[in-house]
Length: 231
Image: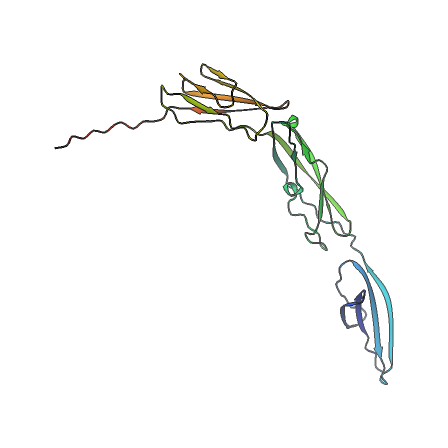
């Protein structure tokens, strides 16, 4: 007595995915989630064929692995006009899934931050969903800081006119307040004569938010003149 050789074929719709011979009591194949049709077929020594089919549904019920950065620092615009929109990529730290790989969708529990929130810390949850709808979550800590101006000045010698520049982080409707050694001004880019070397501070104010930064003004170093006497 000989055992019959049974062959299998797996179809997705009308497309053959994989085929082979059943071995022993268990044959293993790897299939992505989906709906399939499995066909078993065999033949006897006379060439007579026998066949059966049955549906097979492969489900992915395993959640992805959600990985978040432990902390994130963001800088909000002090103008108060444009909020900072946190992106999932700024929080994600290599989330993955056994079936979907990195083909995942992401959502944040909080993604919009305004300048009034500067100085605060928020816990943000990242939801990671695979192609089968399984979702995992992780959290990060978001520190909100105000974006500061970058004041500067033109190189200047003692006795010359000092030209200061507020350099706000973005164009916007700001008011300005400068303070320095025996100096104050409300222009964006003021001048000072006479002036003293030292720390000059500018505070910019937008729609309810302020940011302050300073620049250290020093006199330019001049080279000593050199004289030569021709023979």
